[in-house]
Image (tube, rainbow, N blue to C red):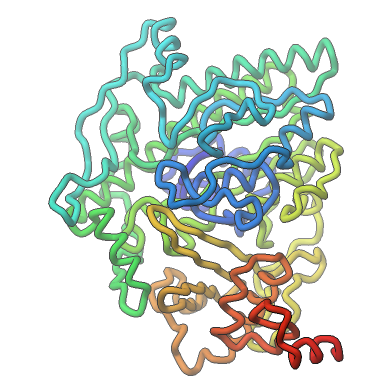
Length: 512
């Protein structure tokens, strides 16, 4: 698992300049999901959803604690997690790398072996990393060539990238892969001598910004070969004002466009560095005789803007850049080179892991096993997605998989609730504080033109609003209360004041 990773950085997803042979091969020998989404584009809530199989509104861990805006900071005691379910089934269970699921509770509290590596980015002063450098006579962390802009208050902007003065063997990414291989060797011995199964996660902190990589990767990609994202032409006209403010916070307009090209080039280099480290781990898996019996997943917690829409990082803008992520699964014995078009979620990993282990996935209430899709269920072509105008059933034929997906956001730096419905052709984003958004991917794949208020879109807008409302209400996501009073969501068979005192509404509900 990577952090803040764009889908278009991988050769398997169509980037001709990407240096990602390992992940390309994983996709070629497994199943690549082209519509794999995060439930929310921010680290802690997304990772908590993976751990629990619950949507963020349900587990309620809604923000990164470093920028907490008043939400809880840890999962409650007694919360179901897949790791503890695996432990109870007799599995070794390990996690090397980024945890970031709360501030007080560690991965060890949820049954994972491995060093506690806290924080949102490479903890380069962690004692275990420093010991690794000393054991291998490797130089310490040192950087130069910093890339950053200027904040609205005139101060220096957030560090976006820098050149690392260490060999590859000293990078935090190489360290994480090494520790993963060491744990894999221990687990393989338990497989051999005790028939004890295992789950092992390698969670890289990158390619999350700042992109800090050694020379070979800082200069790997020629910026001249980097096409700028079309959405760099974003004007923010007709968009929620928060997006323009976020652009200023990330200093996009204070840097020349050549810097944007270099940032993208370094970002791709960072992905190449991680790809190489994943290759070391998969080589070790083959060396240890585990390849024919071990399922492999690759994904990310969410995406990254990297200049798209004149933004960096992630935030209160529900664009594909940060909500659609890579997702690849290889299960021994399943078909190879499969590409799926169904809408699936990072959340679905939870039930899939439990399914592979023969554990009841029911407690992962918002998750659904992907094994039927990986095992070769009839594929669903994109054109079979539901028709927002006709109101056709939002269920794909053949597989019964939903032909749309709902995502959510609760804030970062400040509270900012959003809900999104994505279908084959359209995306609806509800922003209670501001203008809503509607995008048509047939005519505007880069989400530059907000057509929510266009008169000709009224029928599409109303159908999608009703569908989103129904999904949220069925889930128990109370965001639907706002939609009840603000939009045409159809007949309401309950008292919207929730008082129980509206006699007319009560009688109507009983009559129905």
